[in-house]
Length: 100
Image (cartoon, rainbow, N blue to C red; front, side):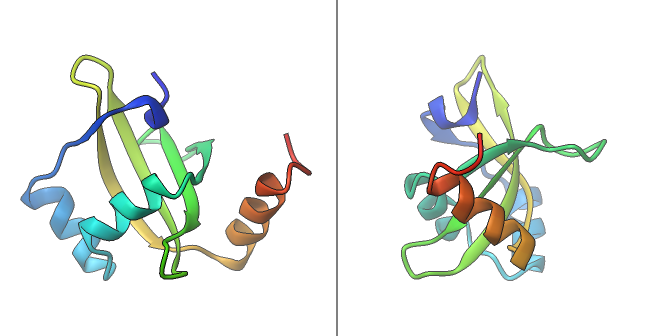
């Protein structure tokens, strides 16, 4: 299941705390999700399967690693950070349809 097809979030103290350590609020993650981010497979072992990259409606560029539970149709944020310049460039290219 692709995370964009999920219909709910799985939040608890653990993942909220991980995001807070990176100065990211849960509502920012949900706003990013709603703003149609660019999705890519996460290549790092041991973390979530997907990365979403984009900008919140306030303009903050974020990268958030997530996993999806197909049984509950929930997305769970694992970690996140302010998107790097390279991630933002890739995001903009995909948005413009220049990358496939």
